[in-house]
Length: 221
Image (cartoon, rainbow, N blue to C red):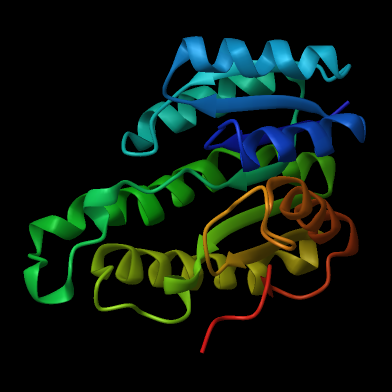
């Protein structure tokens, strides 16, 4: 049995994605900062028959991500699918003219150092399996920079570039990297951007392995 590792486990998209991949037969490693929160999620998944376990780590502490992913693989089995989708902090989204060089340190750690560390932690196991999937979830500022959200615009663009390079480089090894852009808020009443719909879309990206960048819905004009 292989593992679906989710960085950014929450009660919305994270829980829905964990349920979708877990009911498909993967064990689930939930990675987030709060241990009590992780216990609640694993209990809810257990009621659905999903084998899940929580591992504490912080996307702003890349070393903790590597430790958590190694522990997950040791406890649950090799990571076949990695989803990187932690929720960004509000202070990443200052207007561009109010953003200093120091203000970019945390967003770039979150969206570049975190993904690079996570991928390097799981890639050896994927290579041993002979397959793998790397899923990156970003907001619309990844492809359309927004002057009121400078930190995420810069950091998501860098994450996008890294993920695209992974897509091109790892394809010959049967390791698929894909990005899902969610232009607006994830909301239960949204037709295409509700948690369950996005979870189904992410699972399809894993199984269909068709192209790099995908959109939950069209970018607004």
